[in-house]
Length: 248
Length: 224
Image (cartoon, rainbow over all chains, first blue to last red; front, side, top):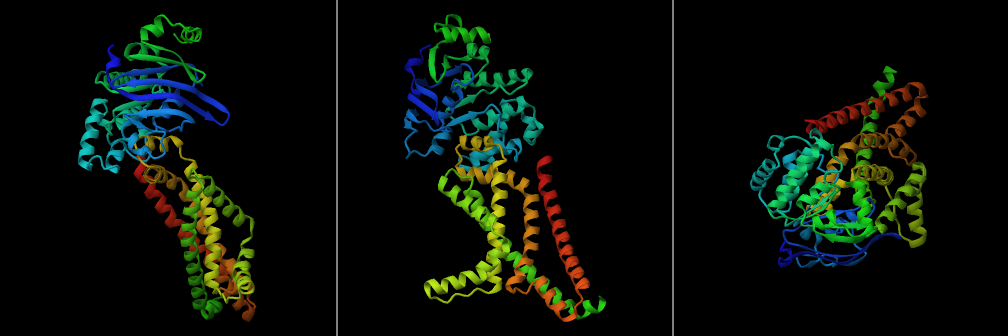
């Protein structure tokens, strides 16, 4: 793919993160390009989620640089809330606002942050619900939805802010197997539409099919990266081979 | 007993009014203190968390009767001897201070626990959309937390109402204080304390009813 000609959307340089004495990320560098779909795979505890959460500063990095759309987000003077408006995030455990129905989940941020009037936000929310196939659930509360439905609402909620970048933190790991497909379908559609996506996942099939690039992480570093064919068909690093043998 | 009520009924009702007045002031300022220190104990700031913790632990560790004597007698005396200034508190002022400090400490714990019981993922999701910490707190976390807090808050209201009786010791003319006066005249200890107990009971049961109705109303919005 001619990925390299496109704009760098996220630039990460020597990213480090420590929790106390526990070094979780030990110098990560990579560039993520506009419209690129990057899947991050690796064993539990390898720092995948922490890496992802550093991109929108839900975790504060201890060292290194993260530049999103030209903004150095580690800079204390940067209004991180403004940056986050452009970065949607989908969580493993959905984290839908339990005190609001589906429609209000989608409308909260656009209306509160004055991105849209109530009417515009409602219209947009209904349109998004339609694209994730949940038009009939607009008035439902999160507690009444299945896992797969919750996650689709969560994706729609993130999209309601019209972000340029979407981060997915193991979006299907908490789902019953039969519901994984419906969520992945929505993500595939999103990838097709050209969204820049960083996806931490254990769904190797999805990574293989949708990713432009796969990062294999272990013990806080990117051990290997490449196209899905490179990583899945001819992995080079012994740890990658070992990991893929276990999960595939 | 009937005669007792006939003679002292209006006096006791007035005293009950004073009890409620004191309780309301105490609750009002107690709630403010509780919200301030409760929020201060959850924010990402070590200093505010420590200050909040000290406040709660000091108040929890001192019996209210000691606090009452300290505020009413101790503080004015202290100010007089250290600064030479004359400073006097009325029993209502001192009582309000005591109740508010006391109620505030327990409320702050209720609020802290209530907020911390909400899944941190709720805050994270809201922050990830670009909402600020306080916006997320007020739009997402607190509405959920308050619902869970209500039984404990009502409980604290009742305790604070009953705690007003302790302030009889600094001469505030609330129900217990007045009842003691009446007994000093009539010696009808059994009847008098029974009447006082029933008066508290009635008010508190009424308060409980209001609280139940409120709780039902708040629950209605969510389950549908």
